[in-house]
Figure (cartoon, rainbow, N blue to C red):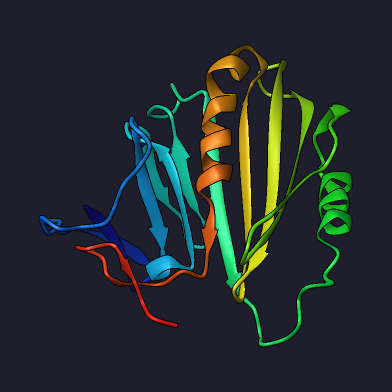
Length: 191
């Protein structure tokens, strides 16, 4: 298991051996990404490249410039409050409206309600001005257990059949605010 630590604005990768009785289980061909001991967790393809940034985490399907997609996640801890009425769909629409790329078409907003989280996402098609090529962008906002996350996924239209299933796994496995006590075992901290 690889773990990232922030040290003076640099990330240091630390490899831990999982215990024989660990509870981690990912979809075949995927690995589990855990940020901040469980603030955000989801599965990504096992062979994708991980690139930590100062405010986000990126996953690429190949070494740049030979990559064809980028999945990026950032998150915030929220102050204690009742966030149940926060207008996620409205905020997501505003995010799409402020996007500066040449948007060709927009999809509907999909709402997912989990026991401890609310998730909204949408997709739009845009023209990549550098490549003069059509691409998709999927944007997700998740809110739950005192965590707000933003996930974006950009990929070429030609790769949609290959990459939409990746998005489906990310959305299905997205978990917010379930903190892990022992990363070598994968057990959650008690409430």
